[in-house]
Image (cartoon, rainbow, N blue to C red; front, side):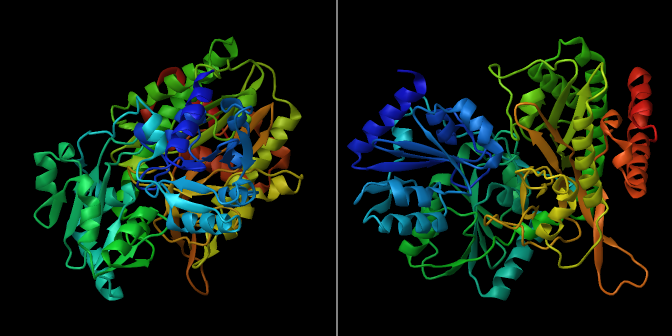
Length: 599
């Protein structure tokens, strides 16, 4: 019996012992994080699936794994189809599947610290139709059988200086208190890790790629706050930074803290707070009001200091990318570069800036057919050589104290000229990228209204891509940050209805993927800014492009570009040259000059 089969078997035995007919395993933690600490990687441990979004359901006689379009190929590579049936979201859902497959009268378990209340209600309603019940477990049965499960990180939480934050934690708490008072709430539960980090101006090292500390906050209407964090993580520096208006409690006394809100009116975000928080407040006799976390929007709207920091981080990061692209240009055609060695070399170029704190996510280094796997994660088993005369896609980012970066570039590994089809697809993606970069739109416009700007040239050729066009980005925080998104307004995706506001940072990343052959994506980060238009009737916005690195000229079919497209690309490359040239020299500078030459 191989490893994952043995683990599934052990879990089924544990479920039988616990009197459960099934159990649901998400990729999640107690904070509804996208990226989670090693201790919370239950889905990967059980199934082998290494993506960042997915859920599994285990019944006595069958099991299913649910992923969206980004992971259609990856899940088949990593998860044994003899043990698990593959389910596509949003075409189906855990609720819909259990509504068909749960045994009549079954008891299905879930961990209320890993799911939202809305999810539990939807699944519970689906199970009702089979006279089955969804019940919260006291101990997660995966944890019961995962003998070498890592412990949660005890890395210290550290202050994030006002010189990078641009606003003191005292001012932020005061703004939340003002919001609480204006809305008649006594307190707000802040459980999203990046919200806690932003509100208190603290950072940590508890989750790979996201500089957050495992903790909760109860923000009070008098401007004080209660922080729940493991005592081992609290240093004298942190205590001094927090001041006497922030009371510090052990993380495992959080439920007790919630009980202390008995009789109070408490704001809780149903998208970011797990069901267990609602249960604890309800049991305590508090009135839990479902409302968006008051930190989410202010966090998304970067202040001037954060904007300036981001530009500095991008200039530094862009030079590392340019050095890497030059290296690829020289080394890859020799046939000795692999996806893994390329990702390692790119990280080294970033580290050589002397300012890199971490990557902002695992580098997506996809050669040939692996580039068509949208959220591909390279490993020793899957790493391919960058073969001569093939497409290479690299999506990567860095965490710096002054900003979080995220950039994708697609290049042709020579020596022959790229095929006409690859150039056609690349240019259609580029035209969509440019159309979005140049968009001008009135105040009140949501990301979903701009999504088709980026897809139109693919659509006209009968093509599309199965991911969103843009996500929000944090300030030395999460590389995927809400509430703003640029995506199709379908499938109940959060954020597509959020209006875009000046100061928000988003990605602009259309793509095209030919399964089994290659992938193309061009991604820059953009900042929403005001546009002064003579005679404008109302307030209008546009985007400032923040990312600077050459776009592969040899993949552009100039005949497909309009005059405006060509004007944008040449102006962009002139700016890339201006920003990056002072940081480069010798062969790297000569390469940059050629890569940025006007078309």
